[in-house]
Image (cartoon, rainbow, N blue to C red; front, side):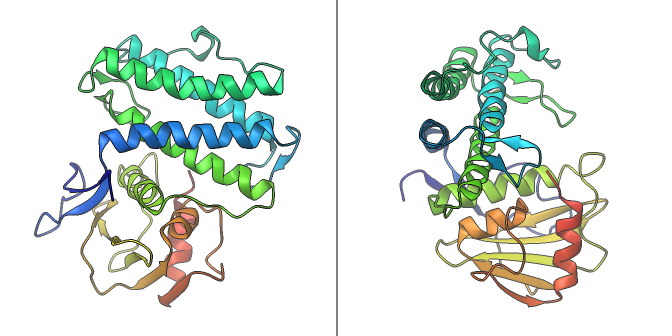
Length: 273
């Protein structure tokens, strides 16, 4: 599959005996997916009632969801353009407010993703900038982060509209990998989701990908190598991703769970994002 690579990302391997090979989107594929996912969300918004409640984001409507995604895309583009090493004030971002007109808002959302890609290209992928997780990271990091803000919130919109969440398996798998990377940053951003001795495996049934997670100090680390786990969840990559995002429950019919389900319950209780 074009854009699907095998790599060994940094920051996951403390405590593991070997460095394992895992799958992720390459930078070109991540850029294309950011545009596609944002465009699909814009299409949904353009053709739907903007006052539709979004149950997975309590208190939000579709209009509020689009405001959040498009505004944060533009905020990210501004942060990268400024090469900022500190958080940028949201109110200083140009055209950060969603247009009232629904068609104009859809176009505003589409353009917001393109602004991120333009900003990273002009600034340089390796230039360190501020992130919410306590350390500076290369500007390229924001492409993937905003991609999966778009994938997660497009899923929210589809669920709100009573539609099935369809997503390219490689994109969903990368979303799960990215989420696990964020969870692995540990406290104070995330509580330790596994007790000592417990392990979690997520196994995709529609793509060659597996995530084996173990406790590592006060956080977790994961590999792409199968291991015997305390609990294993199998399903399509998109369903594993939605479970990890807590958009569907562990009782979802297309998921298969073996082992101790209480370990999964604890994980989900502690990894709200």
